[in-house]
Image (cartoon, rainbow, N blue to C red; front, side, top):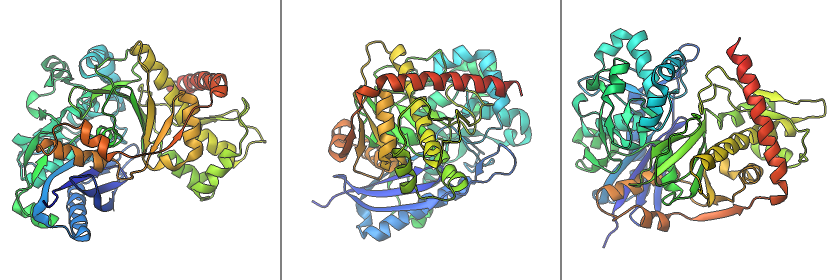
Length: 499
């Protein structure tokens, strides 16, 4: 019997990645189309939603052409996307606002208002605190762009918008899947409904909120007009999909309790897998629903943590290669005199410290490029160390098994070593490189009934690579570094808030 095929698409910050898989997990073709991030004013980061849809169509067409498969064997399409940003759409289903990116910081004042007005309630209900995410962004559009807000029928995310466009849906069919709800600020996450009391508190109309669906739900079928642009037959089922990090977690096989994930991409994301949602009163860890029914992912992330590496390479090192920088970082001796680096160049997200910015501490004339670059790498690991401590406080008796790493940063041997030592658990690389599109393809197969569950095919598709075990002789050193980093972070934040 001829195999069926699944398309997985990730609408990421740097670009849209598409991958075509057969039902056994073999990748037949991949495509990548760069994003066009627009910065019209200080703090603003936007994208054109129609350019994102075009990238989806071009990606599918490219994969189909390169693979040479029989297009009538394509069984389903799954799309994931950036999670914390929003798109305002009109009654016709088309965007009336640009994509307000998760990197956009213009809603800072509304984060503070939501936190002061109902922060505890939002955290308890949704699983995540107000930050640079849906709630404050919706309030920014309502109060600072009222004319545009009046035209908005509903708010969606890039993945959902692309699905709606492929399926020719109007605004009344707008949706959000459960993996995004912890970013909403207005949801009863475990109940999978909008919290009317929270909406009334901030005078947001229930009618402007999209319907809530499961990640694996079949939303519709691709219409002829869009099918032609994609180079495939009309009628292919399209599932709701999930957030990009949820898809990345699935692509790492995070389908059972205790498996941690490090998404070493544009954002540095740390997560683990649990059987329950546990709100964090410290506002460090959010908790979102997994793409796997019945599981949750406590998580935290560094806004643009991965972008810091490219910034350092271009602006500080004089365009030195990453291979050279990693070698220099490996040559640095481990001692308490090494500099520390705050990776929060665009503000801290977990918890919200919007005024905080990046900084080095303990610099001397003895420090060179290797010390500075190692500090940039270590800054992410030390932040993860705070996340791990918080996780163990919330989930008593919880025992993390290992942390599986995905994204471009997983190639750095020295970075993996630093993370393993700080977290005290093995760092496991994965041999597959498709990332989030693999998770979306798995989800698409599950959604149409090709697989009975997600755990079994994930175990068959995921291939583990190199493993880095923690050096137990460095536990005290790493613990002291985390504590010093915490003091540094708090001191710089207090200074930032008073200037």
